[in-house]
Length: 161
Length: 405
Image (cartoon, rainbow over all chains, first blue to last red; front, side):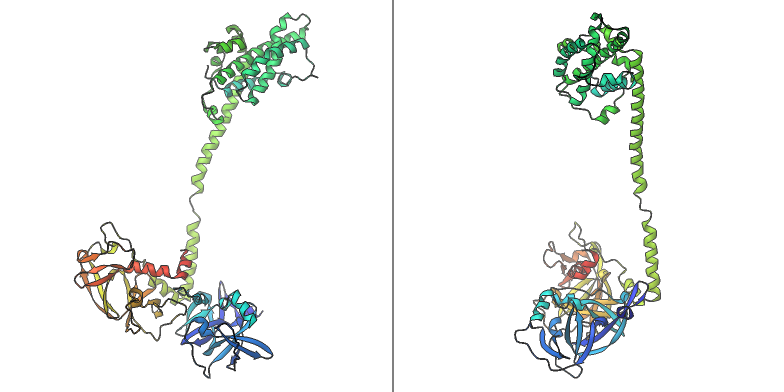
């Protein structure tokens, strides 16, 4: 099974693979099993009346995929597009969407026991996207829980885009 | 004997029933189809039994019913000598019946005595069992008890007839039943005592310590072999944080005697912190600090240290957001003892030993509970670091979830 291949289990401490990307100077990680592909930046067609966290739509081999403004979603300042900007196509909660990131770095292996709980101070809803933090290669990875990226209501909004 | 309880008299009664041969015929209530030796006797007995029914009305129906049926059958015995057509066999039975009827009358006498004591609280079954048994000799002279006019009209028995009721059969039955009840009492008391002794033997949790021990040892193995960073983390926070409790003299727990303070500078403002409540001091590297989105504005990020990640607080923004200027010059992170929180500061001066009396302690700390008082000599605010640590922990929702708070 694909999931078993990506998840090497050592006793009760599974090893998970994470795709890391950069955004606003920090390194984030998402579960490799939820990543379908990584695209170079292409023209994103804006959609009038779409929520502010939606950049627009792209045509991915005949399928329309909604691209999310990740910086906006995380409450970060907006940035400029560069040659390293990528659209990561992910599948979560049965939906396929794209998230715009500054760059994609690598795939890392992390033990479950290495993941530490991140603080959650303040009232910003976006804090719930952080699954935890983990040290890797002398830097701190912020692990994102993609399943919480959008609420049911927001998924319904995306369907109308 | 007037105080004899219903249970005891019923005990006598049922004891006899258990031991006498004509038990079935005696206990069965007479029906219309029932064959009786002398139908005339039944009629007369029913006439005599009527007043008894009325007298026993206040008492429990379940107890009076069998006695009533006994009385109905037993009453012919009193008039038996007047019957000429009684056979020899039935005469023997009648003699026996006469004895029983006398005993029944004694029982009913006692029941009436009980019914007169309505005002007395009812004794529960266990309470009556625990009462010492009355001997047969005490039971028999029921006529000695103070007799009322009601009793005399209902049970016109002489002393002699009463004494006849304490025959050999009745005594043996009583003794046998008494013994049986005593055995039951012993069983009940044994059960009580056993239930008392079981509880303490079960309660001590003897299994828990080995399980915890084995779990800890497993975790220790893992951390030693593979999780060096984690073990450092544990070492950093293994010291319990200082108690933020304030005592009756209006001073915090950590300032009961002379103590050391550290003067720090935050955004151009001098503050004092108790040295005992501090952990480590690290250089602040904002470039290396990991900022997390979605947090409060006073949260700077996670500072990586050899002792683990320190959640760094923008101290000026936390304690005086109204005076905070966006530009800061933080150079150090002073961590709180026992916690993974640290305060960003501009400068740190040498520690000073200070007397608690040289501080004006705040009498009320409802607002700004992190402020302990004013250091008079330096005219600066003394921070209550343990209280601040508690506030920070409470602010962290993930910490509250972990600790079940």
